[in-house]
Image 1 (cartoon, rainbow, N blue to C red):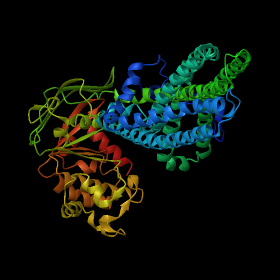
Image 2: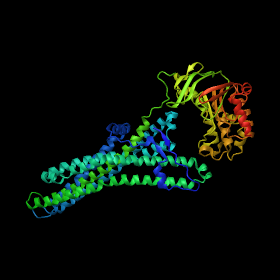
Image 3: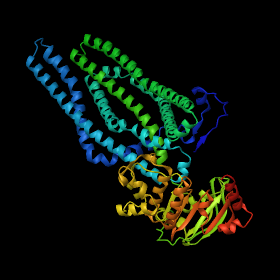
Image 4: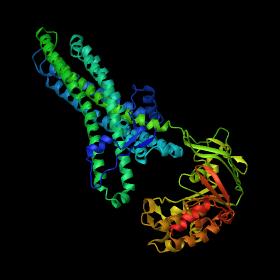
Length: 620
């Protein structure tokens, strides 16, 4: 499953496609969002409701008690009404009985009060259970996503992942808070009504229920169509969220190239597509209502036609007919609600299929059985005939051999796509190698736990991520138990203290997601402070100074001497002036090491490195 971008043909300047044309091209196709066309999975159904199990013992007895009380009182009211008609209002003796009427009326009032109280407490307890289940499910999904490998995120847009954690789980709330218990109540109520109807008059009872099998047959035929329709709704919403996330993050590029109209047009097309899918699924849902109403109407006609005949022949009383009418009305109400719950269940199953698809996704990179914690390392790193492929048949690294001694600084240079970032990703085991061996202090990194390996590696990226929170919290992210003094010392060491103290609240200044209020250089300085605070044995700088001005870079070069001291370091850089003092410079080309040596050694050759330097000087 992957995220495939299909490019459209280049437009002539000034031309604009309509939203319809853009939607036809399906510019973004997410294979992981294909409709899951398979029969209703009862194992998945039981798995979903297994999340209620921890709370069954706590609250289920109370819920069941309230449910039984509510059902019994509701079933008793029509019976008391029939008794009031036949024995108090129009008894066979012809003499009304006001005392009995008042008594039965009081009984009905008491039953309604009990029914109301039971309903209040039942709703309260079911809401508590439902919200706890949603909390557990969302928590499990988020925790599982945190463990997934880079491969997973390489193939999926962030918006698609976001939809699973938010919209798909939110769609289960009604089912867990109301749907499950209400379905049980409706089933118990239906069973009670059927028993009562057959007890009052079995001929009339069978007659009014003759249409039920027809209704169930028709609704069953609609089941698969409705489930697939709701899956399509979820997929369209996922695509909207993916595009929305992309649009917000790329708003500067969109405005810089004046592509707002094109972006709006494309979003309108997606929005309209989503609306049509919703209308289609909703229309199918609504089809249950007319089916039940028609079935109920036919049942009512049978009731009064046959009931009138039975009254005329003396086989039925008016009170029993009234009770029958009430019970029949109450009979179709739960069937209608069950139909709605069934539709709700189909929506939930469409979402749960997408949720469990992620929960069942196994991380490609994980601790091997018997993996042991990596002890504190010196920092010797060795690559032995390392091969790696992002996709089968497309090698990113081809037989890399490299020895790095503890404390050495290694610079990785080469053209884009030469394999520089791949090497540093493999050191932290963010991907697993296709072939060969990588060792740290002689230990195969696949035989140690991921947490113990990565906790001794610090990474500073070109695109520094700043979290919402304070400056202090962002630096402390490198080591959460660091004191305020340690945070400030780390900032001073990389020359970030000065600009931090000029902010409105210093280290307690709140910054928004991605640190939009800070300059690129300031964000990079914070990332250096974060890495220094973590005190890793291996430090990786991936284009870490690319976005910093020359003046700031001079300051950072001094800070790097402190940061790199005593650590094994890998520096990926296109700006070759930043790597002149590296112990070894490794020149990569198409996944192979072509040259290796110090700056002086490589400049004395007429090779790739010398060509890169000359190319940079030509553009200065």
